[in-house]
Image 1 (cartoon, helix red, strand yellow):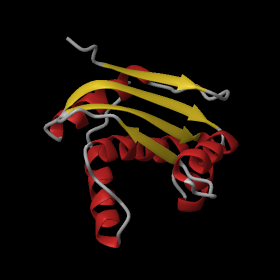
Image 2 (cartoon, rainbow, N blue to C red):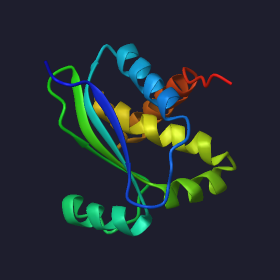
Image 3 (cartoon, rainbow, N blue to C red):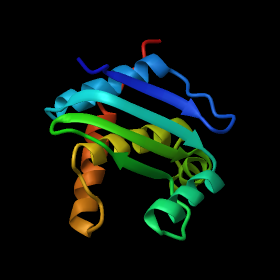
Length: 143
């Protein structure tokens, strides 16, 4: 039996708040897509760290907010999801939303990629954004 786990790791000084609530939400989203959880690793980092990964593995000479490495096996999701907290901060400013809202969007964007959603074309990107909104609505933190 494979271990079913979500790991959060930071390569910078970022500390994820509400880790248990976020894990529960991610599991709910995975289930809502008819998938099951394998092992998913979130790695929070800065722009330079993710830029180097983007250049080395994807040959993209650009900054990005997220890179997902999908190691899923059939309907069991496995992967490494790298998130630049610098980009999330910038995007939150640009889109005039709270950092925590933008972070949730990026966190779930990675899961949606592992579920098979793409965002290369305009129609794929539109569906991805609809799915992000739908999944963000599933998030709840007990106060």
